[in-house]
Length: 576
Image 1 (cartoon, rainbow, N blue to C red):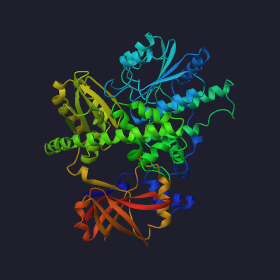
Image 2: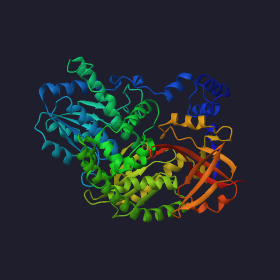
Image 3: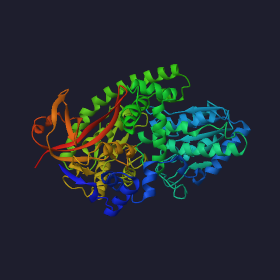
Image 4: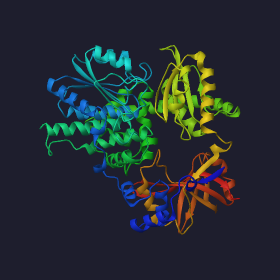
């Protein structure tokens, strides 16, 4: 195990640290953390520490935004029904719920459809078009959210069925873009929006910002009657964090404000979801979204009933929300049981591949539940620190199909695209992909994938054992003011990682085992002793009787109304 300091990757001159510390009235150790995030000016620091909604870009910078807003206003005038066509993951469910809720405030007839992961597959399909045709009479307007950018023939089919079509998506465009009336996607080469890292729900949020402005200009609303768009940001935060989008720039502004709204729990569905997750009090963090809220919402799609999650987030009363949240809890428990049964066999496959020098992992079994392949790939990726794809048979299409997750900053979408000759279909983005192929192509695909990743990574033998350290802490630096400052770095996540600290040659206090698996301990930082936990580190109980080097993060939480600070071990090794 090796510790590498982030300052060897990102460095700023010493005078920059001094400048930030002096002007912001913060300790130098706090200013150093800002520098390690690429912040070098006072204005950058202020925008990072106190992101403001007023600094969001103009939504009209999106390509086709004007056409999309004009078309929705035309639908209002002509009294066309609107169908929102979503996706079954957290981002897609949040985007669907947000747009449906907003359009209803315009007194439009709104219908929605979320495909079934197990029977319909991903995105806009011929079967999905037949479903929405049965829901409304044409002419009508179809708006895709979190999908549609690769549905070239399907959009043509929808237009042929009498729909006008707006595509809103954030996935990577391929060679051809659908011939929709408007295509809103910040990843289009000719899109003028200055930030390409939005989630699907983020793209929808900018659509409603532009639509609200047009409705006010047209006299439909005034400043007093127009809806407060901040109340939609809880859904934006939920979908953005769950989809592992970069928590920088525009997303940082949206998610910081959205987490504030999540903490207020004003939406019945959010309140009920937090209750089921045991989050009855206190604020909500990005970590809470990733590990407590998002898995429950995702469980609905994974188990083939995505409408349950949509009903939760669209619920207008507590009773409806509580019922949906309870159903999600049951689905999530079932999902966990299935996932555990798959993981045992998948880990065996991964170990065998690692022993053979694999640079990317591909696990397959014909009868695995297709709904949990994405989360299995994610778990394996976290465990083995390699890009991972999990596959199973899909008897509906007569192929094998599954999901992949990225590791070590690899653009998995690009890598998969370079192996496209062995695939029937693929889509996604840098962090996550979905794909299908003929079973006969599996071996050739695995070989090609490993070659592409090997060329990209030039991976060293101990790469996966390297822990990136932000700072080595001494007792003098670990002051209450410094610990408190860490909250200003939140929300943490993709591209804004939690700072990892290192203390060398220390003796852990009050060590014990939790469930024979996890290591409980106490760590003294300065004059304060903090409780700590090392998940899955129970086997280190003997080691920590002597002095150790410990890498850790610092968690701020709330228990029974009382704020608490806890240390979470990332790595522990004997002091050399």
